[in-house]
Amino acid sequence: MEAYGMGQMEPNVGLYCKKVLIDPKPRKLLPEWMRFVRGVIDSEDLPLNISRESMQDSALVRKLGDVVAKRLLKHLDKEAVEDAKKYNEFYASFSRFFKEGIATDHTNRDAIAKLLRFESSMTEAGETVSLTDYVKRMKEGQTAIYYQVATSRSSIETGPYVAAFKEKGFEVLYMFEHIDEYVISSLSKFEDKDLKSVNAPDIDLGDATGDGESLPEAEATTLCDWIKERLVSQVETVRTGKRLVGSPALVLTPEGEMSPQIRQMMKAMGKDNDMPGSKVIFEINPRHSLVKGLSKLHQSDPETAGLISEQILDNALLSAGLLDEPQRIIERTQKLMEKLAS
Image (cartoon, rainbow, N blue to C red; front, top):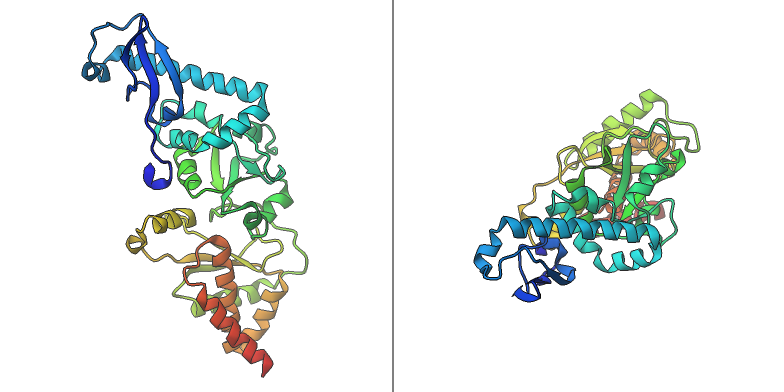
């Protein structure tokens, strides 16, 4: 997990038997992710002459470690309820270890999940919510826990993905670390509720109530087909989107493709050369004035319409964290300005 930014730290819980030190740093006593814990364990049940080698394979030591780990998790859960401010300060310092626990400690995963904290669309900046509290205030008929991973709160709230969820009254968890995508995929469910990214391609929130009349269906289909032909090397599908409110378009990662966050993690690890090229699902907003104008322009001036289509796609890719060559936006913007100026 070091490659994902979890870091390394030596375990520091000493193991004693009747006040006699057996091992100052037993490696397999507690789960690896609990290496931030400091203290001592004194057990009268351990034989004084146990060796460090045999201790690693001792069923008694494993049982002792399991009991201590569960008690610690129970204690932290109690602290989180009784003194939320104090717990949140503690969590801010050690959250990366809990996230590692989700990914690596299958035995205690459910208990660890209760200790996670995230900002959300229903909290102020800096305030957090637990998964338990999220589930308690889910809307009637809501079947999934929605989240978005991005670099900051502002990039989420100015992007195209959460507006429709807010409009429908669905809370969205905000996650700001690349590792969060890996953690959430490891967790998968919480209290039988699926955890689902807001940019998943199969979410249906029903019709959005954005401003303006929509393009006629036949005209929208023609435009989608034209854009697909123009951008065939970059898009898998072009379709009208129901989830768009104030933005002209967004991109979605096809099912089974690497998410933007995982791609960024791979890139940070220097493994981007091993990543396959990725086409996206391109959703356009048939109510947006820019899309309506594009529908008319692609027939009268296909060259300019093509440049605008490419710009809309790159803007959407940039918002999704999928734009690898931002320089092309500058070059294309210059071409468009030259056309306008002439």
